[in-house]
Length: 365
Ligand code: FAD
Ligand code: MG
Image 1: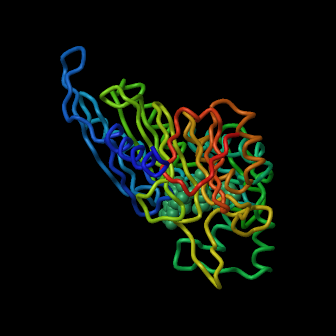
Image 2 (image 1 turned 90 degrees about the vertical axis):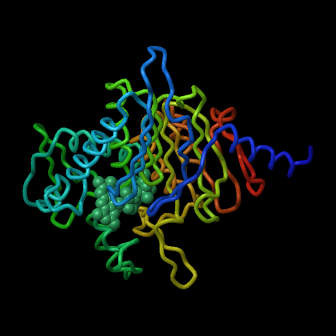
Image 3 (image 1 turned 90 degrees about the horizontal axis):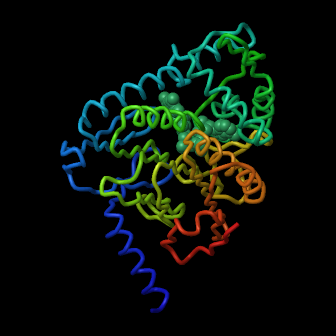
């Protein structure tokens, strides 16, 4: 079989075996699949397993859920309750949230936050240390200054960037006893946009485990998580968006169960000025959108907040440093597409990844 035919065969195979359709939504940076499955299936206890789909706009993205269970509707509703609860704590645009409360009191006083906010901030702090500040939860002033994705987006002046940079430093985020949090300087602010969706997915997955949910799929704007395997006992197949093509075109599919697949890219939230693309992932070293040659960064792990924080970090850090970090950790596998049409893939994924394009040179590391 020649290569083109082989490729066509592979694509058809993905569609048939995975039985999946691709969906693209509003604010997302990868494309994901909700596989089609039989509606009602008898399980071993002869109780009926039903399927429910639902979607809601939360955390500024369309959250899509599919639940297979005896009581899928109740699970679905409780899942959305949990996500709303988290958004109300973690959003920097909701004025009464924990994050807003911390930001309002920057340079003034420590504020007490919920257990979840505190736990997530601890995790964020650890990723800031691990990535030497490439991931920084105090990135708020720079994100606001650039305003990417908002009506105020613009290329700031050099002096604006320099003064915002002075307000970004995770070492000035104090996580004290009794859930008390303090930002040391006025004008500092926390932005959890690069990790909170991952935390929310973990939160929901934990609930699915507690409830012994049969099978489930969550898509939170490019953050995809699956609970167990599919209802027909085959693996899920998750597509990775082609960064150069319209939504729905993928470069590869990853097979697995109990996993999260999280992508950060430069192709969903950006604007172009004088031929330069300015996107939403900011390098805290320079104050400008990151340019280390990576155009799409995907992390696969069974920990969704790790995958979220690291996908953003790897976009900023570039290929070499990213593999160094991924290899130093358990269960962190990566797929990095670079602007010179190469795709760097963790060798642990060899049996689970299927490339669906011939334009990329694949390099296992
Ligand atoms: P990721 O790659 O995961 O992260 C990129 C985002 O992380 C950036 O948009 C920025 O917010 C932040 N970031 C950039 N550089 C860094 C860095 N170096 N270190 C750490 N973080 C960085 N958007 C709205 O426009 N309005 C809203 O009301 C709103 N509410 C939200 C509420 C919650 C709880 C959450 C989690 C997000 C909300 N968002 C909102 C979206 C948010 O602002 C981000 O745009 C979004 O989370 C980006 O996710 P991503 O998967 O595209 O990118
Ligand atoms: Mg992220």
